[in-house]
Length: 326
Ligand SMILES: O=C(O)CCC(=O)C(=O)O
Image (cartoon, rainbow, N blue to C red; front, side, top):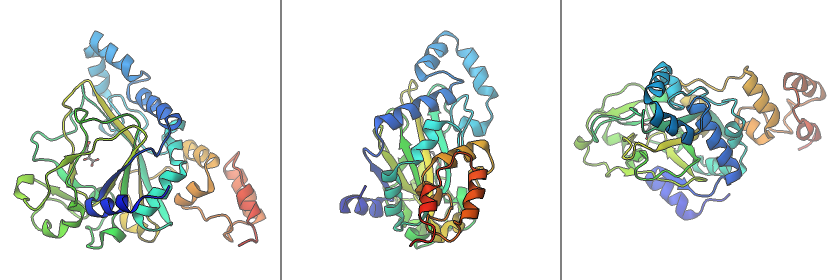
């Protein structure tokens, strides 16, 4: 998928872009169901709401037992980080249009996955927002980089994405962003709280140079991309009978990938979920996970045998066909 000149201009201007129609319903609907059942102890959202209406105390109790990191994936969240082991969720990565867009936004075909994570909030239990509307603004660079943002944002930032699996409307706690703020950090440093790569703004009202925050509403099937340097915050649900969820994958340029080494759990290379995902995915996705492309001298008859042993069921034909080629 080729982004239009207009989309690319919006991206450079705003540091944020919602691209519609990247995922078909066959991909996002099963992903939504898997995310819901993962979030609600095996229930769908409809079942969860019915149970809440009948017995909120039971849900509250289950919610209170959920460790805070797992709550990132919902009130009773289980799997959070990629590979989640939820097949329809992990396999969202196997979408060439999505990866094409990531490459265009990072201005290089050589992109790498930073991490992937379900991000899920639900109105009845949600507290993941600040008390006042002028609080909570920050950039995400600090979650992933030991080093402060660089003036050359296009080279040193990374790109966060949220694959939107249900419509996110104004009353469903859309993220608030300050468009263009990814290029305004020079005027903020020195006046902020934060360390290393982070930046937290105590009071947005003191930063008149920033544009008014706008909500990132989006339709199912779209992907919301934003720069790791973009200033943003969470807001409460206007309608508490709504949920808000997406699957997020973060990408960085291969040539600056180490700049933004993640402080989040990186994909668990040794887990059964990872081995299973890698065995079934494409050479292109393996490449963004760090594998050499087919045609690389790493691939010999002997190394392919070892790969077949390490990743049972993997289709090695593209690698075998390219041995000695290109
Ligand atoms: O939930 C939101 O809208 C904001 C989340 C957020 O601030 C973050 O992911 O860093």
